[in-house]
Image (tube, rainbow, N blue to C red):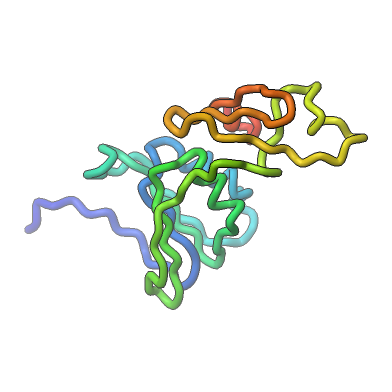
Length: 159
């Protein structure tokens, strides 16, 4: 009898596995991706599992879905240590680490209600520059308002 403890989650045929998510942020990742469970995708969510790199981590598996560049950028903001595995026919065909881009455009809303990006009469997309990756700090290009991870969590309804 083996003394090792194993985590058994079935393989997915086609889709994405997001691994090395900082512990406790998997639900935020799902929210950022617009996944509530009603879309029909098979989703496996594992939280607070042991990790040699992080101590503990979360893992998300989504069958039948791949991620866009914008979605990968959102994942990078809240889970900068994440790795993404693209799965096709039960095999990993691509594996890479997410990276926080220098500029985030059109993905988040500025928290400043007076910002030009929040005015209906002005067709301006939000644009943030990354000031710091750890801890995450973004600054709005238009009004200079500083944003942190907690602001992103509030924006997506998780704070």
